Length: 131
Image 1: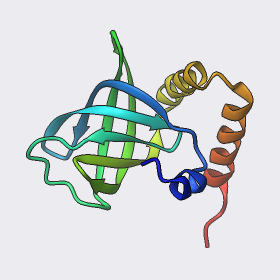
Image 2 (image 1 turned 180 degrees about the horizontal axis):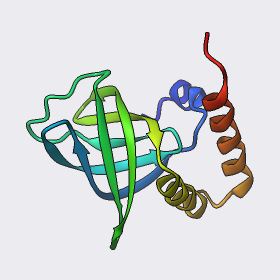
Image 3 (image 1 turned 135 degrees about the vertical axis):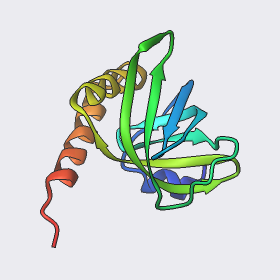
Image 4 (image 1 turned 180 degrees about the vertical axis):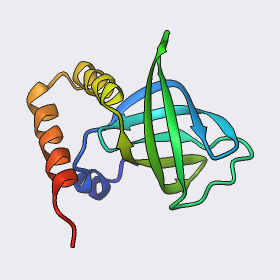
């Protein structure tokens, strides 16, 4: 996804990150791999025999490298499926996981001002009243 128009539309920086992930459904789990992550979601490899479709909801667990005891857990909605990849939009994340995600982004972006702007956008988007 190196399309310049797609990059311009993005409001959140993506960080390439290679680690194991697990998608959890109501009665099944599928192993996958993280390709990249942002404050708003993640791109993973499409799991084998995974029946998911756009709009479906799952729980995504992301293991942080060698520290399998540190896991980012988020409720996600499938935003797109293409070329063996699944785009997951974060719809809910717990306080511990957002702390781990923030630290991961901070370390990989190397720009705390950019991270603070993105967190501000995320906060204002999440707290905006809906009609």
